[in-house]
Image (tube, rainbow, N blue to C red; front, top):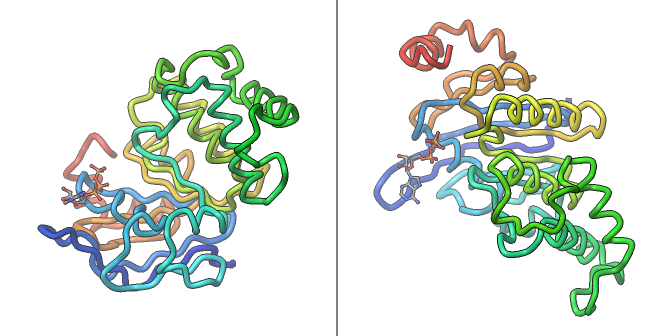
Length: 256
Ligand SMILES: Nc1ncnc2c1ncn2[C@@H]1O[C@H](COP(=O)(O)OP(=O)(O)OP(=O)(O)O)[C@@H](O)[C@H]1O
């Protein structure tokens, strides 16, 4: 198996608190790698370090064989790393359609095509058509003319995923993709994520608290506790690990 992402010896501390200690983690092509851990374990911080939002005090991050440790988030996006957030990041005052068009213009700009030139007074018609087609396939077409700010939580997350996927990432990092969703929305997102891996060959790195979602999605499971990885591997085996059971599933009965 090829490692698409490989982080070694990651140490990270905020001014007042040490968060990650000697973290080694790999993400193999086409796996769905889920990171779990108690609140405050350092999952979001690790995501920020891997996506280039923050830089570790020590350690390295390689993506597709290239050392990207010193690269900013946008440079990693250009290389094929997409990311969604716990609270969806959208152009809140723009319509849903404009959000979808802007993401496609961004993709075209990265590719250097004429459609990506933002000085155009109107978006290229083919991008408008593609944006509408994408909204339809994500069940958002009926909301095309609504401002993104007024969407439901589930629809915001769906739109954010659509925007991220518009850039054709190879690796997509999803920070709690189903947090705060109703059960139907949660099931729809799980289905969509599994389809992305199976049909489009995407590689996924996720954090998630809902154990049903975790075991529906994970092909590999890593447990982070107090900023250290305490287990990583086949989800069923990790679940049986006595230390994991004690620290995560045992004490926090709601997660079992
Ligand atoms: N910007 C910050 N400045 C200082 N400390 C921070 C900052 N962000 C997070 N922390 C602290 O770092 C630790 C790890 O936080 P982090 O958000 O990475 O954990 P997490 O595992 O993602 O938690 P959750 O499951 O609640 O999202 C926590 O103690 C948190 O309070």
